[in-house]
Length: 258
Image 1 (cartoon, rainbow, N blue to C red):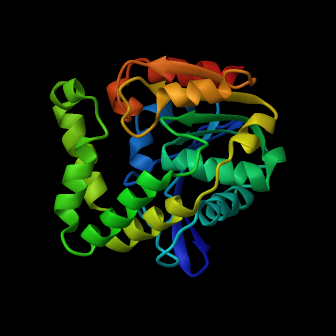
Image 2: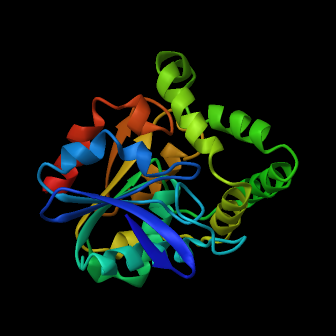
C-alpha cells in the first residue's frame, strides 16, 4: 500500500486483524525483512510493516533523514490506518525511529522492543565512521555496502546462512545513495534516548546479540540493569531475523502477548 506524504510515496503493508503491531526495519533493509515474522503475527494481530524514508519503495525527502523525520512518516501511516495504540518492534535503525516516535507520542505505545538496537547516541568514533562512509558512498557505493554488510553477521553465520545473507545484501544494494546518505546523516544527529525508554509505559524489551559488533551488549546491560527494561541475549550477531530465525517468532510472540 502507498501513502502520499510530503510529496513522496511511503510504502507499507498490513496483515491480519486485531491489536496493532508495528515492525520497523533497520538501515539498508525494507519491509521484506519481516516476510517470515509478519504472517505468523498476522494470525492474531494487525501487523503493519513500513518502509522507512529512503528505503524500500519509500522515497527521500532530502539528504538528511533524522530519526524524528522517520518517526513522523511512521505516525502518518498509523493515522492513515486509524491506529491509536501499538506494540512496536524496531530493528537497529528502526529502533532509533521507534524511540523518536515514543518521545513524540508516548501514549501511542503499549510496548516497545529494540531488536539489535540501542537507546544511545553515537560516540565520537561512530560519528567519524559514518562521516567516512558517507564520503565513500559518493565514490564507490557498491564496494562500501558489500564491505560494511559483512560486519553485521557473526563470522559463522555468513557460512551457515549463505543464501539469506546474499538475499539481504541484494536488498541492501537496492537502497539509493541518497537514501543511504540521508539515513547516515540522521543517525549521526540522534540524541541519547535512554530516558525516553525508561519512562515509557508498557512492555519494554531489548534483544541483544552477543556477537553484535554494532551494539555494545555489556554497556547496554549495565545501563538498564537498575531499570524495568527487560533484555534477552541471543548467541549471534546483528541480524537476528536471519541468525536466530527459528527462535525469533517465539520471542516476539511472547513479547506481544504480555
